[in-house]
Structure formats: C-alpha cells, structure tokens
Length: 185
Image (cartoon, rainbow, N blue to C red; front, side, top):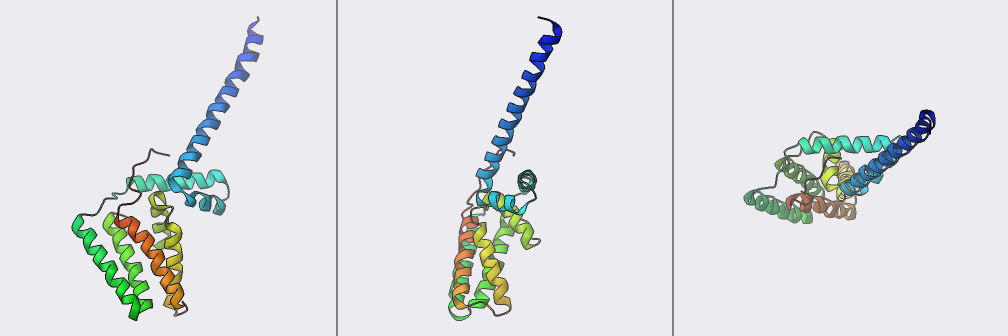
C-alpha cells in the first residue's frame, strides 16, 4: 500500500473519530446543563439566538455561581428566618399587599444571608438558576404579582398566590435545597 493511499484512509478516519468525540462531548455537556438547570435550561434556550449561545450563557452562570461563597445558614439564623416568615404570613390576614412586599424583602434577605448577591432581580434570577432552577418559576411569578401590587392592581387571590410562590423558594433556600457541588460544565 502506498503512502498516498494510506493517508487517504487514515486522515478521513481520524477526522471521523474526532467528530464523534466532539459530538459526544457536546452531548454530555448539554446533558449536564439540562440536569443542573432543570426547566431554566429550556427557558434560556428559547430566549437565546441559538442553543450554543444559551449553553454558553448557562456555563457562564455556573462559573459565576461556583465562585460565590454560598453557605448554609447557622441554626440560629434559620430559626430567625422561619419566625420572620411566620410573621409575614400572619400579616397577610390584615395587610396582604404589605405582606407580599415583606415576603419579597425576606426572600432577598435570606438570599443575602446564604451568600447570593442581591444586586437586581435579573441577576438574582441568573444566580439562583444554577442551584434552584426548578423553583425559579415561583420566584418569577411572585415578583410579577409583587410588582402589580405596588400599583394596587393585584387581586387578593393573586396576592395569596404570590405568598405561595415566595414560600416555595423561601423553603428551598432555608433548607439549603440544591446545595450539591457539581462538576464544571
């Protein structure tokens, strides 16, 4: 067999193997991102120019999150937050709008105590999405109703719903839900 013939066989074979390895690596990366971000993966893909751009953004979120000092709460702080939540729920009976605003502030305060930056709602969503992607829909819904209630445009049922939504994220943050370390993506 001549050198030219041998090269004509080996080079395409190497290219095919390289493409297979690349495809497997991309598939594994995509799977890790889907598992880590849950429903937030699909939401980000739908809002991006391409799936690759969305995955790049999610990887950047994960990298930023992994550099944060996210920590569990000491028992005393956890108990204090639980008592504060009970107070917010009791407040709902007489002052539902105020209770929803207070629930929003309490969730933000809990995030800060855990080590999450709190410099704006959109950034909060991105930071939370890494470990709490499955609860993020609750936070979005609650925040939307909180915004409505600022203009006194939310119904009592919507305000009640906001409290339920805030509670979902609050409980997860309070119990350190999602606090597993992941391999880099």
